[in-house]
Image (tube, one colour):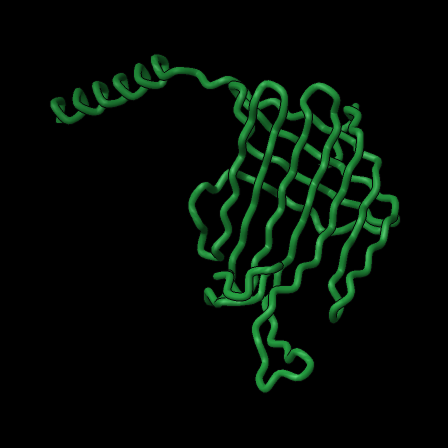
Length: 195
């Protein structure tokens, strides 16, 4: 019994010592930004492209530690309507849903790219290339935030492959249609936390 108690004491002492000797990671720091700017949408309808511009806002929190950005949260407002919050964390390998999120930070700029491909790879008309290999559905997002000026730009692209039958053709072809939304603004730091 005495031997078991001594072993437990040694185990507890080693555990406490390992916690005391473990390196202490710095606390994560979060910056909150308010960005008033403008959205622009471009929608492909048939053979035409419709564009629209309107005011909006974006609330942004950037969490970083040791000069590495760990998480970014976005809360967009379009025409005073609150949209669903977006949370971005680095995922350099494809998740179960095919989503890849890459953070690239320099001294001047934070760049986040996110891609999500769904469906099979098909040959479709993309731009001038009639046999481009593309997924049936592809969603991309690119966020750029200047660390000094606070200028932010975000571009969302939604690409969908559809069957279309050109005039005079005997059969339909696959063609990729793209819808785009962009946001650009100058951001200011916030004094209160909103998330």
